[in-house]
Image 1 (tube, rainbow, N blue to C red):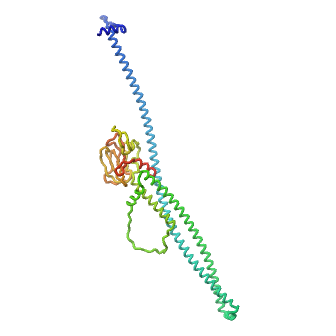
Image 2 (cartoon, rainbow, N blue to C red):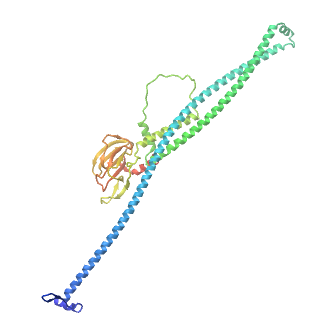
Image 3 (cartoon, rainbow, N blue to C red):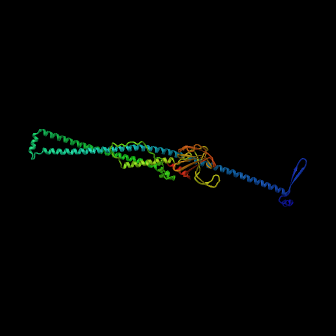
Length: 443
């Protein structure tokens, strides 16, 4: 068989001899065609393997370079996005602080305006009482003036009774004392009349001044009301919008807060009557003031409800948003699964804060969640903070928004260090970003 192969290959690969010369003699090695074919095939295989290995190495080198460049580009993009998010968070925090400062300033202005409003109401009541007294005095003076005029005309008629009444005139002339008395009475009546007219003119001037002052007070009160109403509108609309954006019924929430903050009391004092004698003023201004006070109370209820709602961000340090709420491909390779919260990735030990006021109902280890903290809030809301490296609260502890409750870690079913944050209403998971985005409009 080998001889046949050698014979077949003889034409293509003739037999070769390799001579090896040494001091003792000369030897040679016969290279038969089959042997040379094997050597040539082995060399071709070795060369092909070298070429393939070299090509693979070059491709890996190029691919690694591309992956490094792509990783660097993605890292630069992530850093830029993280910086933008950090800047946006700082801007939001600054805006929230400024908005809170403006709200407190507005409350102080509202308090001052209410004091001015009450003072102006008291002043208006006093002015109305003064006008009424002046009008009564003026009417009394006018009656006295009319009576004096009538008496004066009667006396003049008696003195001018010479026409057909000569004896009366004679008696008047003969009685100097009576004439002097009548003259004095007439002068006194004329002086009283002049004084009454002067007092009437002064009273009318005072009344006009009081009416002008009342008009000025009404204009000022109107401007105060307008400013208060604008401030109430500016403060009320974002709060109402925040709860509506979070899908929460505002009226039922306010009613629940109102029931929880409805305490009243005080010692029972004896009934006393007012010495002013005036009735309570019930006009448009009073109705407007009552409406404004109701709106201010509504704002206060909204603020209380907002403190009890998880509108805050649980991570304040630099973080990366790695997974949203909803269905996703499981990071552990378990297929497409529901993700009941959002993930914030950051360095190990990053502080985690409560997103609203509430009570800690669970603080320990739970399968899948690792070290987990559960906080119960008002309105049937519960928040969960999972995969902590350390828990800093205890069950039953009452916390406020911004209190530190744990440190970010990688406990439980995870692929890296992050916070898994959930919001549940009556046990059903909802998207936490709805509340976070709604809170950015206010805080």
